[in-house]
Amino acid sequence: HPFRGLDGATRYALLRAAELDFGTDPDKLAFTEGQENRASFDLSFSSVPIVTVCTSNFSSMAVEERTGTEGSPELWAYLSSDAGVWRNRRFHRQFSQEHPYELLLGFENISGGYSCGNECAGQIPSKDLGNYCRKVILDREENGGTVLYAACRSGLWKGAEQEDKSFFWSLAYDPKVKTGPDAGVIDVLKSGCFFFVVTAEGLFRSQDLISWNAAFKPGEALGPVTAVASFPGNPSRLVMAVGSGLYSPGEGGLFLSDDQGLTWKEAVKLDPHREL
Image 1: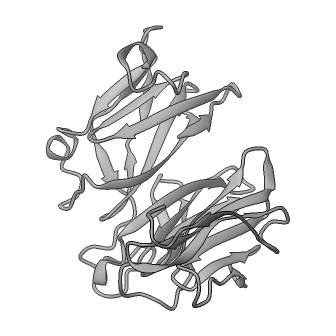
Image 2: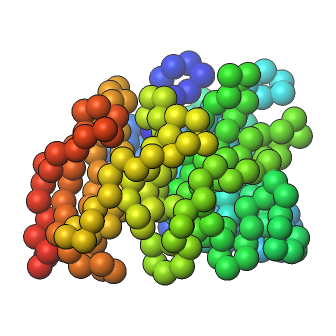
């Protein structure tokens, strides 16, 4: 996961199994000589009794560098999982040039949803696996506050950071399909001024998180939309993956758009008899 530091330089974070690594060279990050920091999750949940539920099944990660209370840089990691959205409590600067950051062994659930009944004000509900979240992305409010968007089985959720560092969650997109393997929101992207969500019905886009329009519906001949991404440095150019032999056999492939999802053209055709 690439992220931009306070100094403007691009850095990289790697999440694998039960470890989180940081470094400046993505090609060497999985090896000892390429790491600036490595931390293990093995003891994090048992050593810090923050909540009564936990997970080790992380599905995506977003990282930001921000200014700490004492003016020093801090790294914050946000992770989606089958039990909501989690945050590493903080990374802080050490007095060491070789290992400038230290990961505190303590992850906390910031999406809530447990022990609050069917309606969870400001939280992502866990009822019917609603807090099974596949993707989390970062954004910024105009006032500089951190905003998270989580693609979950219960929908797309917007999490706004509060003064006490907690997050208040509100439903930004309510999908029609909420059962089955493709339930809820499968993927989320913000590219330029537009938000995109992938659901069992197709790809939808919005500028205000209120009005959503279909950007692509695969129809009967194609398999489902499974992912969407934008090209670095060009928010107008998008790539979309269509087709899955795992759940919904059908044709598909990779589709490109050069106008922020208004029109699409097939770039790679999927052979329905082979896996993509």
